[in-house]
Length: 67
Ligand SMILES: [Zn+2]
Image 1 (cartoon, protein in one colour):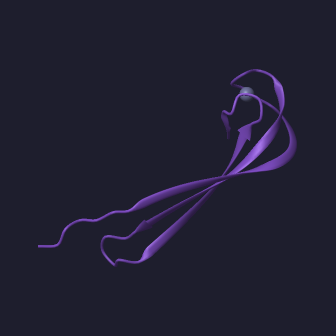
Image 2: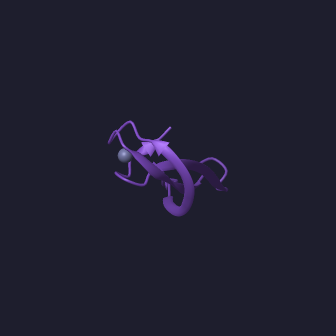
Image 3: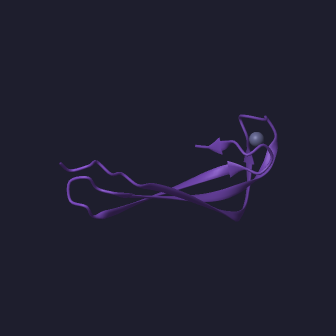
């Protein structure tokens, strides 16, 4: 019987990003941070690795994710 195995690994890299933003969370102007999330997982069907990349902006002041 095949056992279901799913491996999910999330890594985030935060880089400096010199952009002034108005944060809706803390309601202040701040310099945005830039985070790259890489999600890697093994497909249950094919067994192949998948890498999903997402880029998000973070408030440099409170750390909230900016859309
Ligand atoms: Zn903020």
